[in-house]
Length: 160
Length: 261
Image (cartoon, rainbow over all chains, first blue to last red; front, side, top):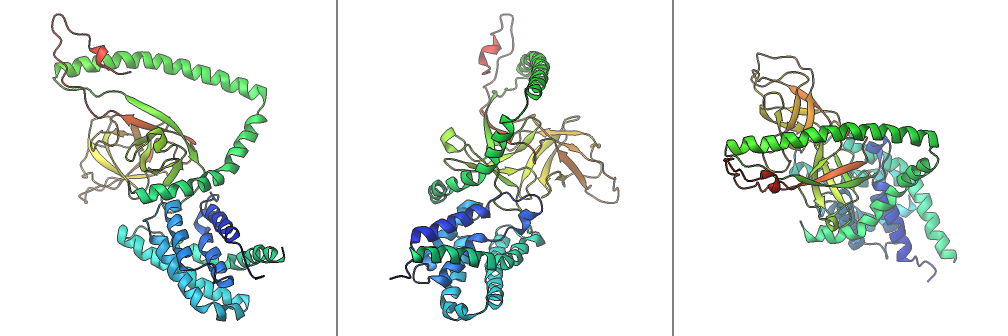
């Protein structure tokens, strides 16, 4: 099967995404840091849906919860829901041009952030700044970059 | 402490150290290229500082003894000294809207949640979660954090709440006729049991009096350099006070043997 992508490689890219997630961006840029883990998960679920599923999304979501010190299961829930939608629509999404895909990614990120917003608001209400929503925008802008890089990672594997 | 989070943290902590690596490399690089002159100057400065602190400590020891004697007269108990562990900040950013930092010491070193964390200038925060290889520290300026303080000048007790800004604490529970002035030093009151008593927390900012309101709007600037320090001190305070020290009689027992220094 020449379409085979090693799971080690997928996991490595997601771990790198986790590293970017907690990287100390200087000053104001920290507010713009997009949700790299979710972007990587979305890419892999669209590219190789047979290898990255809801369980993986849930597991990496749980690890992201620990990484960022959130309530356990918060990211796990958001990620598995978004990945579920991606898996349902992956055939159609692959046909879309990058711009249209970007719009879909925007709504995926928005959905994830909305879920996090609801959960965090239940925990301690009304303490989130408006900048909470900025990662959705930057995530959409970064999508072509993520797409190109991860596509490169996936295809170099295939030629070997 | 939930065991699941601690177990998962063992897989997660390497990522934290990995992200911190560039910062360490840059620091090491700057350390190696520092000039001999600069080192000599710094050494001299530190020597002077140490001398000053040593002299202050001499006085402090005498004051401590005196304090114990006076407390004995009042039939009051005295608390044991504190132990500290120096922890280094990992330069990572878990959530931009929260004031939580991660340090490189964890439960392997005996760190546990709710320990007070200080720097050279004042109170920084408290240990929020402790993992085997790292721990999360909530700064006093986090919007979810409150610290019991007292005004050093007159002992007025109140609570300082985090504002979400790194250079500001809010004192929301002071009546408008409270005896507090701009420039007053706020120290930890020791109430609540988390923070040891008597460490500087913040200095009261300028404020306008509002006689028509029940509570005044007072802010304070933290003493600790919350955004600049890489080294923090985690404190073990022995909250169990020494049982009553008997009143000094003609042949008074030497109280100093009771103090753990």
